[in-house]
Length: 156
Image (cartoon, rainbow, N blue to C red; front, side, top):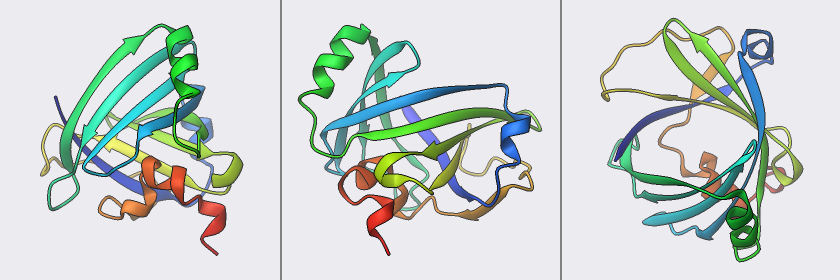
């Protein structure tokens, strides 16, 4: 129940041609407190509830618990969420034996594209595709829970 993840900005849309699948994600937060976020998500045709703990000092590792729930339950729980629902399209891209999940945000976060890679250890080596930009793993403002309260379009 531990997630080791790195986040990067994306510098162009070349990843789209390399993607194996894409789907819409709509998610909201029952609790967006960084100490313990509780997220409700509809990913394609499935519903999920996820609890995440605060990241370690590097921001790479944190507790994560996720359970699939009925889509009708996810839809009902989304009605209880805090303001600021996240809407994005996720592209899955395999690159050199690693899966990159690339999120193209819509709505109030339009213009933001972030790629994530989950690793087996904090020190795991991986190749970076040409479309991968600056690493933002330790920057809270790129976390979905933060974006739900402080949308990307309001940063300027």
